[in-house]
Every structure is written in structure tokens, then in C-alpha cells.
Length: 266
Ligand code: ADP
Image 1 (cartoon, helix red, strand yellow):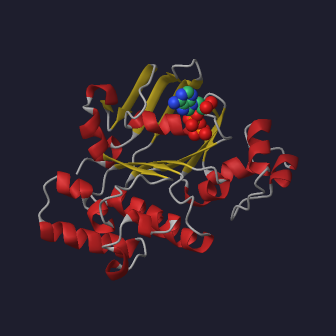
Image 2: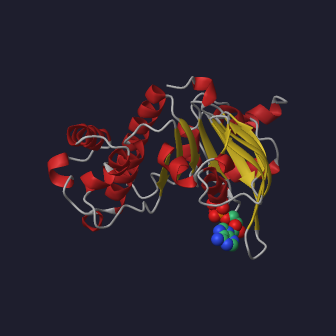
């Protein structure tokens, strides 16, 4: 396995302009450190999903350089790139004509794993995301709730333990209780494997609970602040960040209330 230091993602002067002239990402320079879970937050339309989708070349950058594990993504075959980078999205994109078990075993199958190894991995992953194999293994995606589909999406993305994982609102349709459990289990897997994760969420609470660091974007994927959750909560870099997190009234364990931090001159 590659050393931990080699699995980061870097953006250098990255821009994405869509065909109609929309500048989704103006000039982004950002590092996701190896083994880190970085959350992207910011108002709707500020370029979070575009940023994520450029990493596995679902959207091509107009300018700038993105590297994964030290390699320029433009030098890689996109299909091969996507096989090595896990991707989880809210509306999961499960294969409708494949069962849950077959969906989870997709990439292992492409990589030539034998049947027993695939089967064992499917069992393990279903357990991990809290779905009973006897009940769910043979179901088709349309026979699942939105939250169950997302669990399967997470399991599928983790099937081959990819070193880099991109997640776009991965837990958005899971009910609040199941969500906390899934988040905690996911966090444990991520820590154990040392997976580098870039996660888009509209939920600042989720970002505070899961992120090693949080990047707060404004329009055009402009980085207003990039820091650990406790610093973002206690010392917002500017009014934009202060207003953004105030809208959510976020409790952060161990952090001073913001007003107190400001009064003390931080
Ligand atoms: P976010 O994920 O933060 O909501 P997006 O990255 O989805 O933001 O979108 C950023 C901007 O790019 C928005 O103004 C959005 O309307 C625009 N956009 C996204 N996809 C396309 C597209 N395929 N064509 C044109 N504009 C797009």
C-alpha cells in the first residue's frame, strides 16, 4: 500500500466554466491531505459538486491542475481513474437491473475477484452499513427506501477500499437516527483505512461532526475559510463565514461560544 503521505488531492489554480459561461469554480487552490476527511460547505450553487466532480473527471477543468496521489488526473485514463476513486452521491446511481449484492460487487467484479471473495466482501459491507443480507442482498434498488439505497451506495463505494473517496451528500436521505449511526460507522472505517475523503454536505452539523477540516466556499468556489471545525466555529474568518454558520446555530463540543471568543479578542 502506498504511504499515507502520497494519497492526497491537490487543486492548483483550478477553474471550471460551463458551456453557457457560468463560472462554477473561478480559481481554486486547495489541498486535501492524505488520510484526511475534508468537508466542503457553502451556499447552494457555490461550486461544491463541480469541485468534487472534477477530481474523477466527470467534469473537466477549464484551467489549472488537479493531482491525486501526486499524479495529474489529466494524464490518467478517466475510466481507470474512476475505478480507483470511490464516488458516492445522494441519488446514488445504483444499477437498476442489478441486485443489492451485485451492485456492491461491481468494482470487485471488474477487478477480477473470484466469487467467494466477492460474496464475503458483500456480507461484510452489508453488515457494516446496517442492512440485513438475507433481507436486502437480493433486492433491486427500486425495492429500497431512499436511505437504504444510500447505504448500498456507501457499501458499493467502499467495496475495494479505495484510497480516495469522493462523497456528495452521502447521507442526505438517511433518516436522522440511522444517519448518525452510519456517519459514525463510516468515520471508523475511514480512520481505520486511512482513506482520503472529500465530502460535500449542505449540513454544517455533519461537517462539524465528521470533518478533520472544513472548507467554507462562497460563489465560484472561493475559499472563505479552511480550518478545523473548532476554529471555524469559534473564530470565523469573516462575516460570510460567521453568517453562514450562524444560520445553522451549530453546537460544537469543546468550543467556546462565538460571541465570547470575539469579546476576548480572538
Ligand atoms: P453546489 O454543488 O455548490 O450547489 P454546483 O457545483 O452544482 O454548486 O454548481 C455551481 C454553479 O455551476 C451553479 O451556478 C450551477 O448552476 C452551475 N452549473 C452546474 N452544472 C452546470 C452545467 N452542467 N451547466 C451549466 N451550469 C452548471
